[in-house]
Amino acid sequence: MDYHKLSLKKISQQVEVPEGMIRLSGPLERDNIVNGDGLRAVVWTQGCPNHCPGCQNPETWDYCTGILVPIQDVLDQLSTFKGQTGLTFCGGEPMVQAKACKTIADYVRKEFGWDVWSFSGFTYEVIKEYGKEPWDFVKSLDALIDGPFILKQRDLSLRFRGSSNQRLLRLKVGTGKILSIE
Ligand code: SF4
Image (tube, rainbow, N blue to C red; front, side):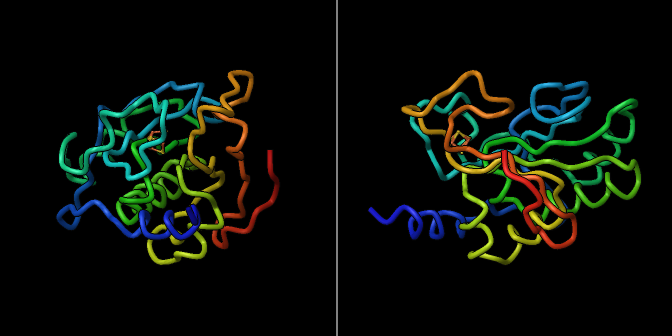
């Protein structure tokens, strides 16, 4: 199986939501310390095409469930979260709603000075080759934790990651250039 080609096909399967909306898998979270550096807000997105065996959140796979909310409501709620240093997008798969995620990412950076991280089951290379909205979203990130969860490579000692194939990539905001790899 050509996993790379399969991933490119999967990333093209975007969640269809009306303009100005985002499909979430759960309520916004605050004061999170396990999904990135510092004290973080978390946006949990709905929909994932990767279906990794051993995934802890299979209820987030469906593209049609979860909660459909206006992006403005997300921004309004995030603006009430005091004392946060950043925002992390978790899933589900944020790249299948990349346009909405980028809107939120750019807003919290500009208005609150937060840094922005995202998880993705796709690798940095697959996202970059695909381009379009997912790559535009990556260019708005300070860090990407990339790659699928692989049960055989599970390692509970890793910071922020579930399996050893996943990488913590620190990125240059605006270009998506990799600054460091953990
Ligand atoms: S990419 Fe994440 S949410 Fe999607 S199946 Fe894999 S572990 Fe689960």
